[in-house]
Length: 531
Ligand code: GLN
Image (cartoon, helix red, strand yellow):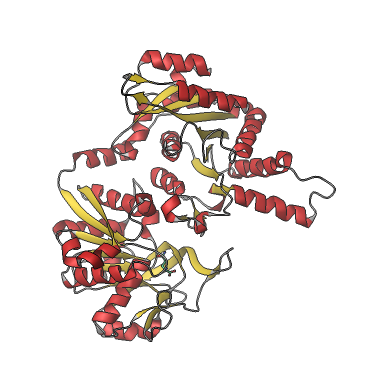
């Protein structure tokens, strides 16, 4: 069992998650069993309560854990499923230590950051490694070396490097800026960042230098000398148009071989097979025809808020041989400028998930337009609920139809809290979280897209379609094409009279990967292309 710790220096947003995923992909493509976990230095117990504006999307694992969006990258790159132990926050660590303290586990002892917090961190850092399911465990440490918040994590990495010896390495990602006035690449921030790690007792084994320009040999040699890292282990990560090119760029510089050698393995023993990955890349690079898709939502200022949706749309476009042009539209804009002005000309429209009332009237306006103009439309979670509400208002004639989440006084609550099947979350709320089974209706669009009758998809919501309205919806042409087999709750609705008008109560975007694009997204993009 080998352990790789990925840390970052100089600034955040250098793409540690992409580097961790790329390393994982290269090792996996040599036949190794790999998983990736993230240790995040914030006090929140999980990502469920984080604001998407600040932190991007909340990613949901099959076992119903609300996690950091980097777990989405791990799953998309590696095609694996991650679970609750793959995402650990400082809050979770402290919660456990305090729970143990109250239980009397440390009786008589002063409970301290070292060793009690660091022991709890180390236990969790090793947990997946001890399962026997993997050959490599990659751990990404959130934040930047030198942050107060990440100190206990880095101290734990120092201890584990000492304890695990040759089975453990540190890959440190830093930034090499280019000063335009001096026309020079500057290595000082990297040197400082490595000094910071060394002060904390960690000697990086591999350095990855994020850069906008190629790093010449002499600069690489300088970094190697000043940072005590072998020259072959100083790798550049130059900006690329797509994150999916990163593994290939890393491979070209021999990153996988360097890592294997440092961990005492012979790179000649295994062959790197990136056939499927490269097929995806060449399809992406060779696509000429463009498909124009709009996402109507309320978190459009920070595009990371819809990361899994935009990636799923990209995967689906590539496999349809198309170039994706994605436009984010604030749902308020649809109201202010009119649906015709904002949406005409798009080949397809996605109505995004979300919580709360803000922006929903714009979603109804968008849906009325795309339904009436037969534009391929994909409603996801709140987007599906909005589809039902818009249909109830404008087709069934219930002018005040709404969800009780959005208007508790409505007399036509077509979306409501339903009794069945809720998980009580740690925050005390009740939600459907994680994967639930769904049975598809024979002959439906959903069934033909999936090509099977039984599926399982991930949920994250509190409200449901209110079954008391089902017959009225059906009589007016709505088909309930996916039902939960236990509770009968509506999971997929579609309008067969339209080219492609479908909503899912679940989040299909979480399970689309580079090598396995999601069937519903593929089918949606195929319909949009014909539009
Ligand atoms: N706010 C809605 C609910 O709780 C939808 C949530 C979502 O889109 N993820 O049911």
